[in-house]
Amino acid sequence: VPPSARVVERCAAHPARPAADHCPRCGRPRCAPDRDNGGSRGCLLCPVPVRPVGPVEVLVRAGLAGYATAAVGGWIATQYVGVHVMSLLVPAVVGLAVAASASAACGRPSDAIRRAVTLVAAAAALLGVGLGFRLFPISPVESAALVAAPYACALAGVLAWPILFGPVRRRPADVSAERGPSPAA
Ligand SMILES: [Zn+2]
Ligand SMILES: [Zn+2]
Image 1 (cartoon, helix red, strand yellow):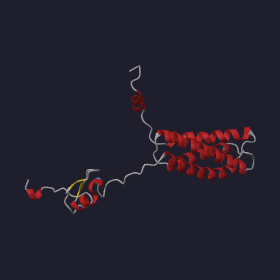
Image 2 (image 1 turned 45 degrees about the horizontal axis):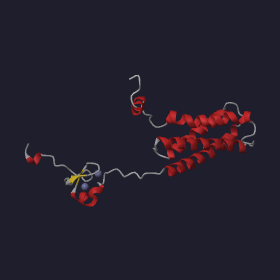
Image 3 (image 1 turned 180 degrees about the vertical axis):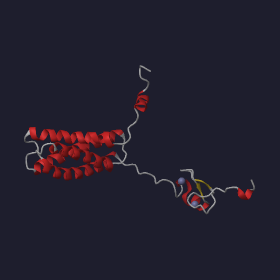
Image 4 (image 1 turned 60 degrees about the vertical axis):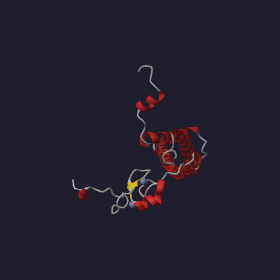
């Protein structure tokens, strides 16, 4: 192969420029100006560093999003208090929606925080359904026969959300590998 035909490595961000080195963070070839500007911090194409978010911030975000959804859901639920199947279906949908918005607001937290977010979402969903009763207007804790099932459906909605739409769960094999070999193996 004649030298002129050799492919000279090019800067990943500026294909017109030859590469001077490789980015220490992502390994992409980068040109001399990029190397001088970026140094050890990386190149123009490096993924933006993700700012770590503390658990409190995650829960506050989840709570705000969850309560906002719950307020809207509770307002809708007032239309359906005591209305046959809808009085159960609407709280369940409120629970799903609250869990969805709380979860969407907090990104991809750890398992422990995810459980806490579920608790926050459950509290928000109960509050939303309770608000629905309050606006109806009956006391949110008045007649257990009327309010118990909708509250339960709201909780079921919150708990169902991660099962139906949540992040991809780890395969059982991964979990058992973490716990060590089972006695049967
Ligand atoms: Zn470049
Ligand atoms: Zn890079």
